[in-house]
Amino acid sequence: MNSPASLAFPSEPIDRAASIFVAGHRGLVGSALMRQLESEGFANVLTATRQQLDLRDQAAVSAWFEANRPEYVYLVAGTVGGVYANSTRPAEFLYDNLMIHGTVVHSAHQTGTKKLLYLGSSCIYPRHASQPISEDQLLTGPLEPTNESYALAKIAGIKLCSSYRRQYGADFISAMPTNLYGPGDNFDLEASHVIPALMRKFHDAKLAGASEVSIWGTGSAMREFLHVDDLARACVFLMDSYSDEPHLNVGTGEDLSIRSLAEMIREIVHPEAELVFDTSKPDGMPRKVLDVSALHDQGWKHSVELRDGLVETYRWFVEHYADARGVQN
Image (tube, rainbow, N blue to C red):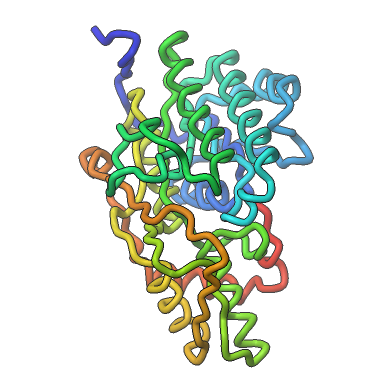
C-alpha cells in the first residue's frame, strides 16, 4: 500500500462524455487545449470568461464549482508574461497566481472533482540548476530574480496539489512545461515572451523598412521551446495516463541560443534585418532546458519541430495582426 507521501492512483482514460472544466480557456494554453479536447471527442467542456468568473475570488469560484461540479479540471489559468512584465509587475504576478491556484484547487476538492491537472512553469527551478533540469531540482537553490514572484506562485501551486493529495487523497497532478509558443500567443511587446516579441519586432521592422532589430541581452542565453499544441496533447495524455504525486516536466529536451532563435525568426520574417543586441537588458537564466526523460518513459514525446512551429505561428500572427498585438493570456 502506498504511504501518504507517495499516494498514487490507478490511471484510466477519461470518459469522453465526462464534464471537464478548462480554467483559462482563452489563453495561449487554454485555447490550444480546447482545440485538442474537441479533436479527441470530448463533448462536455465547461468554460468561464473573466467577466463571468473571477478566479481570484474564492466565494465566486466555490459557487461556480457547486453549481457545475466538473468531474475533471485543467488548471491552466494565470497571469503570465515575459521578462519585462515579470520584472515590473511582481506583486500582481504573485497575488493573482496564488489566488487562482488556491481557489480552483480548493473548490475542486470541496465538490469532489475526480482529477485535476495543474500546469506550472519551468521557471520554478533554481537559476543555477544543473542542465538539463530534472524534476528533483525543485527548491535546491535561489530562483532567477527576474521572474521570482511568478516562480514562487507556481511552486506554491505544485505544493498545493501535493498537499491536497496527501491530506485528502485528491487525485491532483502537476506538469511543468518549458517555454511555450504558437498560434494565439501574446504579441504585446510589454507583456510577451521572447518568440512573439521577436516575431513582432521583425515584422514591424519589415513594414517600416527598418534595417535593424534590437534584441534584449547578449543573445547567449540558451532556451528550449515547445509548441503549445504539443503541450495540449501532453495535458490530455497525462490526464488519461498519469496519477502520481511528483510533477513532470513537459518539453522537447532540446535548446538553442537566443541569437540562433533570432536568426531563425529573421530568416522567416525579415531576412534583410541586422541584429543589434542591447546588452543593457538582462539575459535571465544563462541556460534552461528540461530533462524530459520521465515524460518519455510515460510514453509521450513532442511532434512539432521548432522551425515548422515558428512558420505556423508567424502565419497566424500575420493573419491576426490587428488583434494579436494586444492578445491577453
